[in-house]
Length: 265
Ligand SMILES: C[S@@+](CC[C@H](N)C(=O)[O-])C[C@H]1O[C@@H](n2cnc3c(N)ncnc32)[C@H](O)[C@@H]1O
Image (cartoon, rainbow, N blue to C red; front, side, top):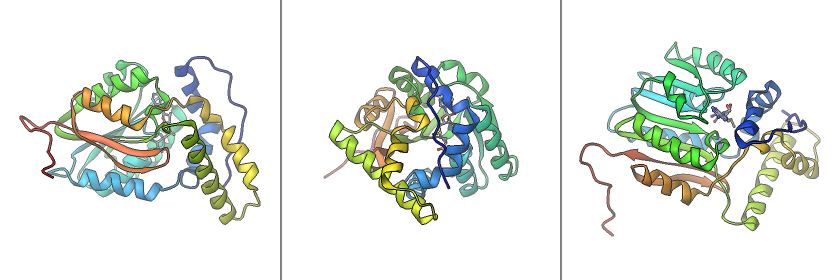
């Protein structure tokens, strides 16, 4: 399994930079290499499913925001066989893959092409949902849109519903970022060697630094994003899993007059 390294396209604004995801070669490189590229995929998904399973009843409707090829939604639908889903993304090649994958869930998922850069994305999406999930997508939006999107997601949830964001977050400092980058490089090198590829650590380091989707990343710190979630109304906000710059965090929409659960010690 290899990653195609291509020249990043010359695009200017943050929203335009995210457009690399509409290019088939970027999509292919990501989808074919996801598990090898992202350490801890299994634990991330187990943690996500564990939180979904903590709801008082299995989620009936699940929305995947920036769904890509549908990995998270397909996994959630497999775990909750009575649920239905909606996958939102702005990338036609990603949605094509999502359609193919989600068909295996017996037609329980709809696919919607929409750009999260504007609140208009909600036009094609009928709420409410018991759960909204997202994987490595929202960090492509500018920070003010991330925060606004969290509010829009909150409004789309039923009372008591949950939002879970599996995300690439910013390290606390450049030193910590360098440690995180090297951890990713070592992981990807080991995966590729195990797959029989005679690739050097230096080559992987260079490819990681020059990867085509890097231009589309606008990372925000985990604590700042958890603060945004609280500000837009989420309760019981927390990080459920974290490894360097990879984090699963989220919160719950208050149910009726429910208060946030409080520690007694
Ligand atoms: C790294 S992929 C992750 C895909 C999938 N969620 C996963 O966990 O494997 C990022 C996804 O975000 C989508 N994306 C990026 N910017 C977007 C935007 N402004 N509106 C909708 N989708 C966007 C891309 O098309 C891509 O499918």
